[in-house]
Amino acid sequence: RSNVLNIRVLSARRWLLSASAILVLLVVAACGPAPLGTGWPSVSLIKSVCGDTSSLNVMISYMDRIVQVNPADGKSSPLLNSDCEPRPPESDGKPRVWDFRPSGGKQFYTTPLLLQDNTLLVIANDQHIFRIDATTARAEDADGAAIDGRTGHAVTDLAVSDDLIYVGLSAKDVVALERDTLDVRWTFETEHGVWGKPLLQDGVLYFSSLDHYLYAVDAELGELKWKLDLEGAVTGMPLYANDRLYIGSFARKLFEISLDGEIVNQYSTVDWVWGTPTIQDDILYFADLGGYVYALDTAANLSEVWKQQVATRAIRPSPLVTGDTLIVVSRDHKIYWRNRADGSPILDAEGNPLVRELQGEILSDILLVQPEDGVNITKPYIIVSTTSPSQLLAAYTLDNGESKWSYSYQ
Image (cartoon, rainbow, N blue to C red; front, side, top):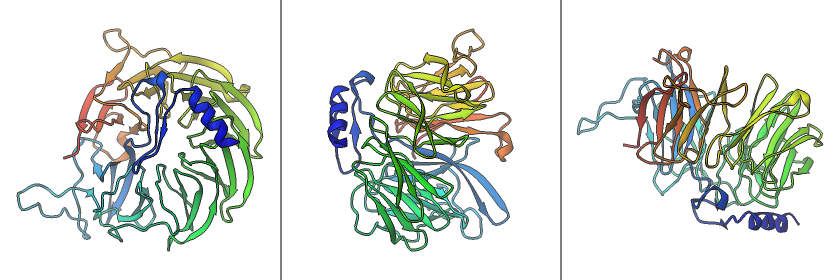
């Protein structure tokens, strides 16, 4: 029944579902002819420690490599040796930089996790898991470790507990692996793919699926506690706040759900909701694939505070909310600065809406870097990533959108 309903919804929205060896694509006519797939860059801030010093770097996973970039100037981070000293330059004088590129055509679209032993844990698109030394960029296993008995692809981030790694698989199912050995502890079957990162909260693993369901599973045993039909495919990670779960679906709805698996409140949106909401002062902020941004009051049964069509194309990532400012990014290549209170545009010095246009679609979450993070900047930066190889990363000042640097693969 779920697969039939899923196909009916996809057909009604004129989406094309296709599978390939690298990624699964969804095409929505209302958002333009280009596909909104799962192969965009994954960006995160990683604070690694070597000896007596720590450093904060932007880590980008995209296509055949994972690299680290200095958030202050956009330059590649130097590669260190085991003594925490920069390694000698190449024979041609080029500096050695932090750049993980295994052989075998591996592709990376997920965020590495930094473990307590200064090890990065990341999964490639072909479901091979790598343990990488955060200082030297060397993997324990050059080929990565395959998941026993499974083939296919992984398009979402890993979740970890003290002893388990949780892997959502793009075809179907969630697998729990022993953290030390990567042996399979348990497998939980779904009827379709899992594209959203699982959420681990108080011993329960919550995850969504394209089969329309939100699942709650015992994190140690893999036993179902409950599942809830959200009336359409679900691609996001649920947000946990105030003893509730918040998540959107392709049914054009945002749901507030109790930890017992009951729908407490719901709100209808203009278009499909892909990303995870964010919350501040009990106000929930999220966007849809029609370019709309919403603010809902969770203390008043998800009553609408404001709704604005901000972008001309789909907004996949979560909004960035900081102070009185809300920032969203879109497939239309643009960054939008908005007033958090009412969603109205923030104006630049000339009185125009503060908007910046980049070279490619922006599908990844926004990073906020503060001066107090130990980074050599005098004011906060936002860092965004695009799908354009000539501008994979770009940094702007938070307050007025001044361009600070741009980065592309070398």
